[in-house]
Image (cartoon, rainbow, N blue to C red; front, side, top):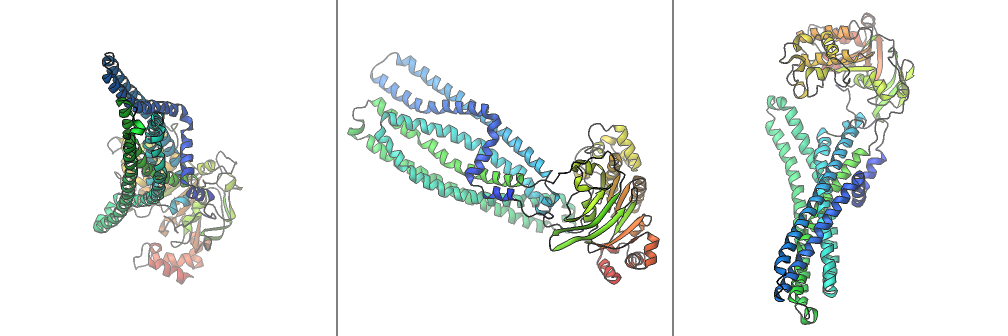
Length: 617
């Protein structure tokens, strides 16, 4: 449980990377997205070839139709055989070209999406912890799911339409100019009008796409909270409140979608109207004797068919802009995440197994520069020593222990492990020296054995897992589970009790066997029997390790080698249980309050803690 709620990465202003991604133009974002295609240029070339074949068959169909009409008028008997064969060959070529284009592009796009997903998850695993403090889980999940799928649309559907229909338009226009270049100029005259409509629609598309992503993140967040907190929701009869919140977020998302639909539904018919007007002018001119007066019936049919075929690809090209802009907006959101600064890992020092000497030297830290959370912390912890941190919520206890594995980086002072500043350790090596057991146990989908051995690699044997479970007093309940160590724990360990989850976390720490141990309220909110089991397990776990214990129940830390009392980010007193009682100050008053006849078993979790601290001051 955190003592304070971080607001910003420690000592870090917003990096230029995410800002730069947010300020990139649509073309720049799309160009960056297309760079992911480079490893698959061979498949992209096959796709391009396929769509060229597909595009050629469209004007070829018009030419075949005109030629067939001319052969009928000329009573060419051979045309009876040649024309059907040409018809089948054109359709066959169209099918082969469409297959090559679609399959190759889908192959490329799915690899791009796979790579992006992996990069996003890898980045989420490497950004500073403070990044999660500033972003909701729903928005981050939305990036991996919704945003990536929008990119897939821009990388597959949009490119498919652009290549296939774009090449078709080029082929049709080229043939039209070949047949009669003067009539074909009509289409060039309407191009500026079409470009203006597309430009105006593009601005709206991108703005609404960003709003859609934000609202989708809210929808995902509320849904995620509703599923995880369904017991609390039902206990407090908050179903109606949650439904109203979800209704508002979903309604906002619906409105943004409808704005996008309105823009798309307006821009596409306008472009179609302009094309139709150009077609009407073209037909009116084509029927004039001076333009096609000397042409055969087949040539007239070919020309009008070519002009008529332009409508469909132009209509599809006008609609693809919405898909592209949604993809660009989604890509911009993902690139903002990918451009965030990762955890600083510039250390090169590695150690096999440290002794466990921990030194805090004038440590200063603030989530916000104006509000220091740790202020001048100086403390020396000898190897194998158990140190208990006591103080009211917000005094900086959890923040202090979170400094050890470098979840946050301090601004001033220094922390040394075996005499070496922790910033000089390679990050993986530093965290290899530490194990942590917290109140909120995190279990992952999988078996009991997989959760105990989580992250430790395949070299961990079942015998070692079972030994760790026995040390944690977990083997007795594991053996009773259906499947034993192969039993599934459920989502977040939902199939286990709180005490069972806690013992699995302790078994995980046993198996890791790190010389430095952090226990952050590891026994709070448990029943008496479970707490006894866990206290026995913890007593074995801390033996021979440098241990930091945060506990609100003072009875659980009376045997600690050193008790440190913190208040407002400072150490106000320290010593053994007997020494602090003899001082008759902060710790003594808190101890009397907790064990007084009033029955306050945990004053540090209540308003009385603040009163006690104030009176102790």
